[in-house]
Amino acid sequence: MKQHRLTELLNNEELEILQECDELTLDFTSLSKDALSVVTPHCVVIGYGELCDTFLALCVNEKHTALEVLHLLPQDFVRLSGHLGAFKLYFKNAQGAVEEIATSQVVSFAPLENLPHFKGVHTPNMYESADSMLRSLLALCGEQNYSRSIVFDSSHCQYQGRRPFSDGSNVCHSCVDICPTMGVSSDDSLKILHLSPIDCISCGKCVSVCPTGSMQREGDGLESFTYKARLYKGRIPLIVARADLESQQFAKDFRALKEYNCLLLPFVLEVPDMLNSTYFLTLLQESSAPIVLYSPLGEHISSDIESLNTIYERIFAKKAIYNFTDSQALGMLQPLTQSHYIYTPASKETSKDIFSERMRFWIKQEEYSKVSIKGFGILGIDARKCTMCLSCVEACNTNALINNNSSFELLYKSSLCTGCGYCVASCAEQVLSIESHTLNLIPESFEYIPIAVDEPFRCIECDKIFATRKSIEKIKQILTPAFGSDILKLKTLECCADCKVKVMFEGAH
Image (cartoon, rainbow, N blue to C red):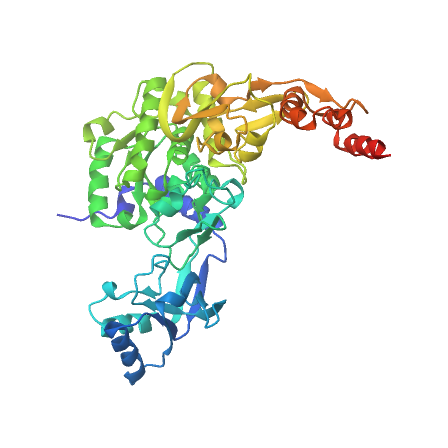
C-alpha cells in the first residue's frame, strides 16, 4: 500500500498556512535562545565511607582522568545553587564560617535533604557502579549546548516576592511542583524562582499551569499563538506535536480524518502540553471553530478542557474540544460564526487579561451561572467592616482589586482573580473570603464593580483629604485607650502626616 506524505495531503493554501506559522515562531524567538556552557573537569565529592572512598580512589587512579576533585564531609555542606558547569557550593570551614566554592559538578554519597537534583548532581543510587558514575560525570565535561525555552516575567508571578501563608504554604508553587527536572526551582528563603535552561527538557508544563501567563514558551507565547490561530479562520485546528507531524502514522491518520472532514488542518506545536484555558479559548475564537486533539495531552490539562467544554456547551449548545478518535463527531464539525472574535493582546498583558476580554465577548449580557475552572476565584467581603486600608489592593498583582481614588471605592473584577487568597491573608480586618476554582459567567464578572465604599476624611488642621473615615475611626478605636486624656495626642489621630508633626511640635513648646 502506498505511504502518503503529509505534503501530498494538503493543498497549496494549507501548506502556506503551516509555513507562515513556522515563520511566526521564528519572528517571536529571541536570537539569544541558544547558548553554550563549558563544563570544566571539576567536582566536589560529599560523603564518607567505603563507597565514597572507592569513588575517590577511582578518580585518582584512573589514568585518563583529568578530573580535579575536592572532598567535603556531609556535616559541612550548607546549600547548592547554580547549574551544571557553574555551581556555587556553600560549606562551613573549620571555624564554622560559611564559605563558597565554584564547581562544575557534585557527587554526594550522603542523603542530604537540601541538595537539589540539578543536572550535574550525582548520587550512587543513579548508577550501577562507581565506574559508571565516573563515566557519566566525565561525559558531561566539555561543551554543553542548550536552549532557553521558557520566558519568565516576574511582575505578575504569584510566588515571587510573596510571603507564605500562616501555615507555611506558598501562595503559588505550581510551576515548581509540576517541573519533572530542576528547570524551575524556588528559593523559599528569598521567595525567588530560579530557571535553569540547561536542566529544562522543554516539556511546557510550567507554562500550562501558570495562572497569570508569567511563564511562556519562546516563540509560542500568547501573542505569537494569537497570530497563528488567526490563520485558521474557517478551518478546524487539529492540534499535533511537531514530533508526531512527520510520522507515517500521522500521515495515515490525517488522510482518514480528511475524508471525514476536509476542514481539518494541523495546528503544530513543539509541545502541546503548554496549553491551558487561555490558549484554547484563543484558538476557539480566532478560528471560529471547535478544536480536535491528535497528540495526547497531560493530565494537568484535562480540567481546562472540561471547563471550556462546559462553557461552550452552555453558550453554544455544542462541544468545543474533541479527540481525533471520535470520527463520527468529526464529520459533523463546522465553523461557528457567533464564536468568532479577533483580539490582539498587548505584549505585557497577562493571560488573565486576555481570558477576561475574550470570555466577556462570549458572555455579553447573558447569564450562564458558575463554572468550575482552575486559576479563578470569587471574592467575598463584609463591606461593613472594611476600613478601606487597601492592603488587599497592594497584595493583588493581577489588578483584580483596584481602588477608585476619586470616589473612595474598592473595585473588583472577578475574571482577573486567580483565587490565590493572598488578599485574604493580607486583610487586617479579616473581612475577605475566597471561593477558589470558580468563575461566575455573568456580565458583572468581566467589569469592575464596587464591593466597598467609604467617604474621605479631611485633616482637622489643613482640610486635606488623607484617609478614609472608617480607617481613622478604626485607629481612634485602637489608640484612644492608650492615649487616655492626652488631648494633643488624640488630636494628632485626625491630622495628616504634615500637620501631625506640627501639632506635636507646638505642644512641646
